[in-house]
Structure formats: C-alpha cells, structure tokens
Length: 402
Length: 175
Image (cartoon, one colour):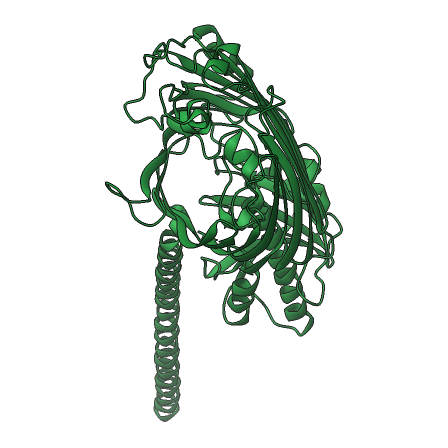
C-alpha cells in the first residue's frame, strides 16, 4: 500500500515537473513574443519618425528649390538690350542702342514697386552720344482683384510699343518711326493713375501726370514744335500745367486687342513763352491701335493724331496738326522664324500742305528667335520723303530680354 | 478727383484680396464628379529633362501632387509669366485636356488669360509627337509671356498624365 502511494507521489511529482517545465517554456515564449511586440512597436515609431524627418527634408529641399527660383523672391531683377547695325544712305553705324535693367520689389502681395533704368547708346556723360535715363519707378497698389492704383514715374498708356518694347516682342530692328515721332515712344511722366478691368476683356487706364514743354526758343523750327523734344523726362520738369491720359481696350477675343486713347495737355509751353511771345497752347492726342494674331498670322495697325492750338503755328507753320499711321502684317513660318512688312506715314506739319513734310516708309524683314527671348533681326527700309531726304538701306540687330 | 477715386474703389467687387480666382479645393471638386484619389509623382530623371525642354527649366519640386479618378486626372502647377508665378490647373481626360483654369495670377499685366475666351482654346488639346499642343493657341497682346506659361504647363501636364498612365500599365506605383 505504502509502495503504491510512493509510486503515485513520484508520478505526480514527475507530472508537476513536466508541467512546470512547460509553463517555463510557455513563459519564455510569452516573454519572447512580448519582446518582439515591443520591438515591433518601437520599430513602427522609428519608421514614423523617419518618415516625418524625410517629409520635412523633402519639404525643406522643395522650399529651397522654390526660393532659388527668382520669382519667389521679394526683389527681382530683369532687363533687356539691343545692338543695332544700320547701313543707310546717311551713313553706317553700330550702336548698342539700349541696355536696360528692371529692378522690382514686392512689399506685400498687393503692393509692388517697379523700375526701369536705361543706358542709351552705350556711353553717357558730358558731350557723349548716350544718356542714362530712369524710365519707370512707380509703386502699384492692387487695391482689388481687378483694379490697381499706381504713383511715381511710369510709362504713358498709349500706342503699341510705349509700354511693351522688349526687342523680342516686335518686328524691325529699330522701333517704327510713327510711334517714335507721334506718340512719342518711349514716353514716361510722373504722376498717378488707375488701371484695371471693367468687364471680362475690357481694360481701362486713367492717368494724371506731368506735361510736355515745347522748346519754343530753339533755333531749329522743327525742334520748336517737336512733341518728341518736348518730353521733360521728369527731371526738374516744369509742372505749371499737367496732363491726363485715358485709354479703353478690348482683348476679349483670342488674339485680338483693340485700344482707343485720348490725352489732354493743358499747355504745351508750361506758361513759359521762352521769350518768344507764344504760350498757352493746349493740345489733344487721339490714338487708335489694333493687334490681331491668328495661328501664324499677325497684324498690327496704329493711327495717332495731335490736334494742337493754332498758337504753335507761330513756332512752326502747320504744326497744329501732327499725324501718323502704319499697317504691319506678319507671318511666322515656325515658332522661331517670322517675316513682316510695314507701311506707314507721318507728318509733323500736316496742316501746311506746302511744307513737304510727309514721310512715308516701307519696311520688310525677318526675326529669328534663337530662344523665345533672344532674337536676331534684319530688315530693309525704303523712305519716300516729300522733302527728298530719303534714307534707304538695311538694318541688322540682336536683342534679348529676361 | 476724390470722387473718382472712391468710384473706382466701388467698382471693385472684392477689396484687397489679391488675385486668387479659384481655390485649389474648388478646382478639384469642379473637375470630378466622384471624389478623386490624391496621389503624388516623383519628378526625377526623365521627367525633369522633359520639364527643361517644355518649360525651359527644371520644375522646382521633388514631387507633384495630382488627383485621379478613373482615366481623369487633375494637376496644379506654378509657372512664371514675366516675374511672378501663375497658378494653373489642368484637368485631363484620357490623353486630352478637358479644362484649364487660372487659380491665381500675380503679374502686373496680362490677367486676361484667366477668362474662358482664352482658356477654352486648350479644351480637347492633346500632345503632338513633337511635344507641341494639338490645338493652336492664339495669344493676348501684351501678355505673351503669360500665354507661353499656360501653354507650357498644359503640355507638361499632358506629358505627366501620359507618364503616370504608362507606369500603371506596367504595374508600377508612382507614389
């Protein structure tokens, strides 16, 4: 009996030992599993943190890429330039006609400063052929989504070339003579103005600014009545009388832009008769232009006319009417190569039929865009001037903008 | 003069809000009937080379988000006009442009590009073998650079759409 009990106890002890061993193994497995789970959780945390760090790194790199992009800086630099070679009846010349720098600054999303500083004819100074000119320096406040207010020194909103004249944007080595002499481009004044959109495609400009001042005592009659020479360029300019310019434009159809502008000059002499006894000359400018582009064809046309008080005739007979126009069809063979022809006429003494002052000009040529913003140009010009001083020949040029 | 100034202010519908015309969210919701899936694509290797050809420079990002539902995708990218970035949205169905929208315009001139009379020219345009747009696009005088920016981004969006479609076709994942 005792022996049987001893065997039973031994058997139970063995079972207990076996169970304890199994429990230990299970505990060990459980511990291992818990460790693995803990490691897994830890790994997931590390992975999440690494992802966050990677995301932050990518975002930093992308931000740096965007900041490296000039457009995202508050202060930006741009410019354009053009080199011309003219081989004309009056002689040959090579001229780095314009070297221009734009410096702009964004004060806020809706408040920007724009400026344009130009060196004309490469060299400037006393007795030199060129000039250094500040052509734009104004602040524009975009006070609403479609309307802006600007003040400072700005380009007058007139014509086709006066505001957009980077060499890669127009045909012909030299700017056309109509806009040069009648508008007269490039023309800037000091003052303030509004511009914006009245309805989709309908734009407006309204500017109040400094006025012209005729050089009434100049020995040359043509200089005395010249609108181009009357630009004061906002350099200690006589401001006895101001001027105003208004323009309405329509660009609500693809490829089309039509503009009509009016300007009032209250007194072209600025109350100063220059000791020649002529003052108080008011003037109105009427200007109309069309630009149209359809596929590879394009067309530009402009008409401009000054209607000036007759007092100016005492300075130069017939100058109370100064008028000009041109037509310019063009065709692009491909995005790089385009051909144009232009025919136009202008007359600075149009009301004097005996003045022989009308100048007609025909141009034909090509633009080759090496890059969308780098262009090589060639053209041939033929003048037919009433006074017989024709100036025929050819021009070659290069230009760029950025 | 004072009266004129206030009249012009009254003409404006929203004061001092900048030139953001459509929010990103509105553009996406207007582009899709169903809720699209947002994905992203890495702009690496060939894609940046194509960007240089089409835009004239590398696109300033490592990845680009886009939205997709079936065969339709929508892309939002920034591109410089003259100086400031224009935010442009392009929706593509299959291999053709369904819609181009200007979400924000920051240049001083040329804002007319946001109007439908201009953007509708892109509808139905695909990418030609020489990487030009299938549709001719007539410009806006005085806004040449902005027109060029929208045209180039439309071409790049078509390329990216095609690029992601071909990736999925061979079983790769782009995000």
